[in-house]
Image (cartoon, rainbow, N blue to C red; front, side, top):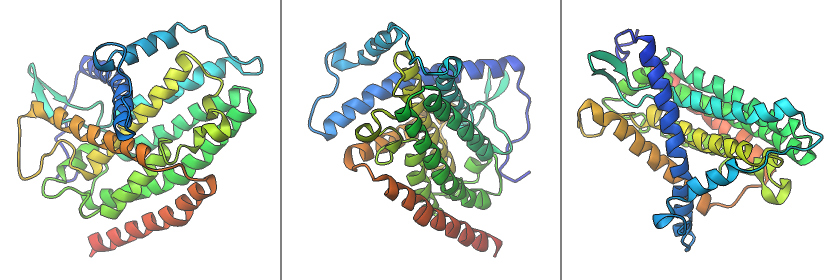
Amino acid sequence: MTPFALVTYFEPWWIQIIKALVIFAVAFAILPILTVYERKLLGRFQGRYGPNRVGPFGLMQPLAEIVKFATKEPSRPTTSVGYLFRIAPAIAILTAVAGLALVPFGNVQTIFGYRVGLYGIDVSVGPLYVFAFAGISFYGIMLGGWSSGSKYSFLGAMRAAAQLISYEVSQALSLVGVIITAGTLSLTGIVHAQRGMWFFIPQFFGFLIFMVASFAETGRSPFDLVEAETELVGGYFTEYGGTGFVAYLFAEYMNMMVVSGIAVTMFFGGWLLPFGIHPPGWVDPIVVIVKILLFITFFIWIRATLPRLRYDQLMSLGWKILLPLATLNLLVTAILVAS
């Protein structure tokens, strides 16, 4: 056990169930808000209004769209594989929620006499757990494209496979430097290790590599080649409509929340505040959510700013630039820590 690890404590099974339900409820409550937030912010960046008709300031637009998609008649191509066509979106969204369960939103607090960790679970191999579910989420994309029975969908799924494999390696290596510096794989332990200094300072290059790789991992601009409309019609979810399409859309936003939460945890001190400020424990989740929203705003800002890359540029950046830089950052960190 490292000096930064939390003291082991026991949570009753019913507390774990409540925490799981809270994670699902908060995630699905925030996602519609993020959709209208992104559209409003893009409108401001691009000199237009964005949603402003449904409800006050257009805030009811997500609800109207959810009702529209939920009431659409379900359909699928005659060439599709039925059960896989329906399962694929569920895999994508469940793996994203599982990744969110690892993000620590606060320290262990006493609530009604019980010690409760303000996170889903704190496993001793936190980053490996996240990447394991990221690997499983790939099957949600791959199965969605293959089971659609469409050549365009299958081509989008194959692009997704190549893109995720290319950037997942660099993304993982960029976090190893943080793990070496902290001396633990526990995400809460990594947060405690940043009490003196947030890790984005000594691991600045690792942070930059992680962010670039995260844009590609989540399929966000300028790396949204998985669903490039001008080339692939709509990518792996071309044949999806209604709830299936919404599930893939929510999975994309959920993955954006997960990588933002991992960035906050690994590089920006999690629930810790700078300048030695120590607020009460109930403030911890608010601090983490504000930091995550700042990262999501950055994702949206980049979408409004940079044009889409060509596919050969995407692959060259991943294998020829990011991977060597991530390896070099890891070697330098290992030498400095060992010395």
